[in-house]
Image (cartoon, rainbow, N blue to C red; front, side, top):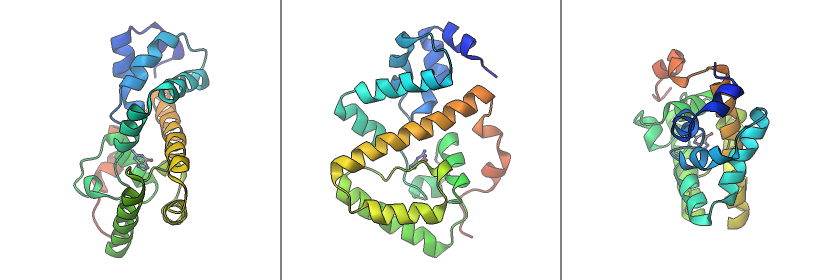
Length: 186
Ligand code: GUN
């Protein structure tokens, strides 16, 4: 279980290697947060990471949003999610969908992408699948800028839970029940 003191002592490469996964496929967030050390606690470290993300230019923010997989999407069905994503989607029950529910997710994912140009992001570990579906429908009506900002806010929540796991020494690969419950229709 890495302590904050240990994290504060890491050189830039090791820091990025340890925390690069907190933002999906975007280790630059950790990398560019390293100069903000030392961090007095997890909340301060998380705030530093979020400040880096919020301070990045818009094209990088958009790329970060686009780095997220669709919920119950093609990557999930092909078991090509990162370990963290697989855990997040499974925690919302998205690995146990009926074929009809799969189709519904597919349609809403496609509608959302067509309207906004990026995937629908919600912190799946904090939201059950029924609530995710309700949010997908209702957020489709929002203005694009509002959705862009909402996506960044959800990414901050996702990163906080991933950070807490990291600090507790929880590795998603160790959740064998999730690996076993691959994305197969109910
Ligand atoms: N896409 C939408 N929500 C999520 C989430 O909670 N985690 C990941 N990895 N991708 C998402």
